[in-house]
Length: 175
Image (tube, rainbow, N blue to C red; front, side):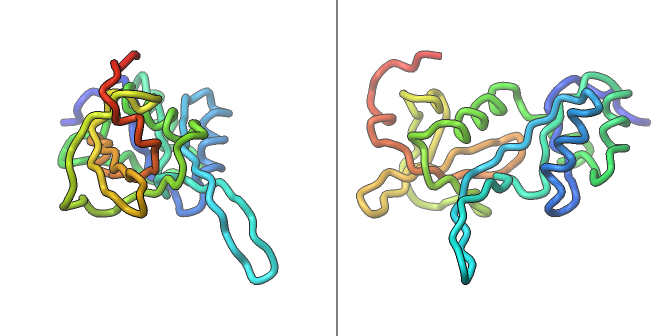
């Protein structure tokens, strides 16, 4: 027996290097989609270029309201399946999508990269200032910078980003 489809942000697995195309096709089909992109510098033998790459390769977030949206999403060329953990679909909280959007759009946050494994050392704190206000993070000190690992629990992934150390001050968190 199939479970009813709940409204929310689903994690859609797509063909490798087809993330931007799938996001465009989803939007053309009136399906709300979000592909977090990060700027990175790529070097070739003849040039260096800043390119935008997916933060989560092969993943596109889609907001699904109904079973019809769900099946319409899966019929788009280049899509695979919605990610599951056990028998349940991975649904990302709206708040986490907003935080990812803030993370990828804020100029003060640099060196964003995805971590494949959980860090084992460092202090866990709550960011109390800036666009990531309210998120828990693990601090890793390197080269006099505070590196944080931001946990995105719904998709069991980690992101690292260099943020200003004053974001961890004891100022009030204003949402």
